[in-house]
Length: 432
Ligand SMILES: *Cc1c(COP(=O)(O)O)cnc(C)c1O
Image (cartoon, rainbow, N blue to C red):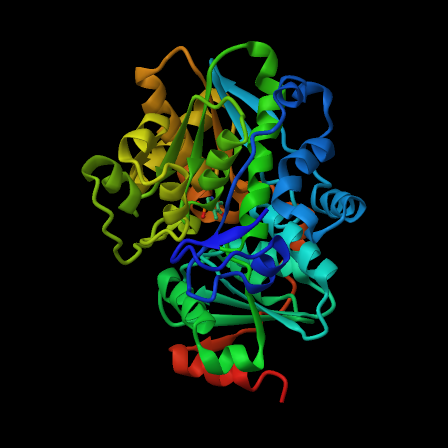
């Protein structure tokens, strides 16, 4: 399997190179060439397979010859050591819970897979992993890389209360090889610094930079597993099914589209967003107009210019009609999100988080017109991560998992950064 850059189609690289560099030299995102559908009989017998077997089958062609079979299986085992329960919520509506990993959000799978791959490739020169985060990515990446030899991780997160208290603690209390930078700006400013760093000749001469955002294929592609895991449970129903994915940078839903390309019979995918509605607007108007991100209560989706959208266009050969036949996108505001949390709590005694609630709303909207299908929405974080908003809305307190209690006792450590110049100065002096 080779990867091309989505900026030019010139440079073809293997999995190892794409993972180590994160972004192509021309600044483009890597994209796999020649994706082969998985054997149909494997998919028909998914309910007889373990999660580890499924993950291996899904990812092996993307890894190609870069990692041997035994080592890849070990990496999968280390990555997937928790559950992905599919819960019945309402008639024809199910929740796929993706928050049972160590940092209580779905990003643990991609972050751990990436960390283990980089550790496997273990170059002599230390890898400096850059990661821009609106909250959850940084936590998952820090946890995945903590103590991994030959890596240093720099997390850039927006200051001014744009990440929740628990998220900030997850980002800033790691120590060892993890450094947190609090950026004076919004998430898009963090992302811009990371993107600029990759095209900065001085930095790249001195450091082995890589990205741990979903622009890195080793973080993005393993997210396809979730859709197969859900299908394993749905296989027997013999009904058409659709997924609603709470979306910010559109990495997760783009992995769902990859699952479709691999032959998983998904009828339709719904990208549900908060008021950062660049993609829903594109679906309506055919015009892609990125804009600055706005702060919401589902902060992991406060993205005004989603990195992975270009990959989605590539999957559909830039054909708008094909795209809209397989995918929809809807946006919801904070008030609607909180109302959904209340309603689901009152009706079903189930506590949604602010992101999952947006996914739920998108699914409901779609099913209104497509009532025969089974809908699955992805619950991407544990509600405790956004407890302030949720507790105020439903008037109860959410039980704090043990892991989180331990965090509240640790001291926060971060570096304040105002602009690219300050960032560059800091990281050029990293090892001196
Ligand atoms: C990151 C995140 C999202 C958005 O995922 P993308 O892949 O960026 O679209 C949604 N919900 C939660 C809780 C997240 O952490």
